Amino acid sequence: MFEQIISVDRMEQAVSLFGSFDENIRLVEKEYGVEVLSRGSELKIQGEPENVALAARAVSGLLTLINKGEALSEQNVRYVLSLVRDGNEDKLATMTADCICITSKGKPIKPKTLGQKKYIETIRNNTVIFGIGPAGTGKTYLAVAMAVNAFRAKEVNRIILTRPAVEAGEKLGFLPGDLQQKVDPYLRPLYDALFDMLGAENFQKYQERGNIEVAPLAYMRGRTLDDSFIILDEAQNTTQEQMKMFLTRMGFNSKVVVTGDITQIDLPDGKKSGLVEIVKILKGIDGISAVNFTEKDVVRHRIVQEIVKAYEKYEEAKKRK
Image (cartoon, rainbow, N blue to C red; front, side, top):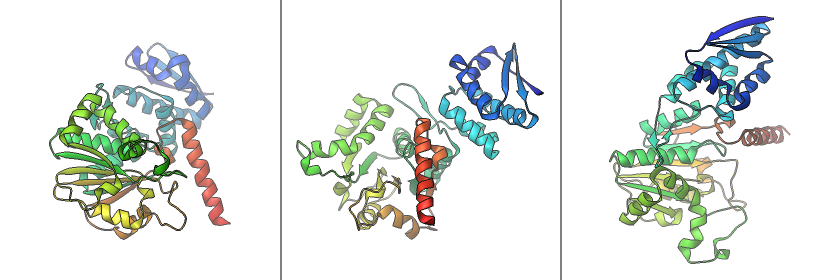
């Protein structure tokens, strides 16, 4: 039985590290087959030498998050374990230092994975950005946070959020109400993100002034959008023609973020996704960059990560056959 001791500066750190009913430390113990004991200002890790070394790296990574003011959850504990697996836990400190903006309730929004950090840096340093990856990776939410940050800093005069009104097996005509009421359900995720950042009252005020616009993609035709932060969500459901139309709307001092999941295309049979094609077409152009998320960047429930992983394996097996 091998043993390693890690010193803890304050008792609060140990309490946060262990979590409610020791749930955080149990994940570490289960992952590496070790036992972690708290003795005053020291943590004692016992087990096989190699496993103890890995567990010590994981515990150090979790303490880094705690010292940066992060509340531990099952999601970020599992993420630290995956970073240890890849030998990247030393990058945690730089990831948590990046606060994008503060929500209406005073909560700081920070990248939770290295993929998200890369996405934020890419948005900062480019004019047209493609965020491609599975559900739950924060593609839309972080893009909206960056838009709100740019708007508050007066870098842009408007935030424009749009998405194609295409969903699995549904038609707009069957929904009740006028056109605005018909498209609102399709735009709800964008409204939710903006409410979170700005609060419902501020959102209403900015929308009435024309500083914020949430509209279906069809409304973009024939316009030139200057001084704007423009986000196209669910872009996998655009046709090639729609994608070209959208990207050529961009005016001076504007930034465009295009997000989508190319594994969830709801276009009718025979229609090619504009998102799949455009990344190949624009590859290598200065000021245009793409970020690809993986299942490791999923920040929803662990099961979502497992579902994404299972689908990827299934698709790979299908291709091999």
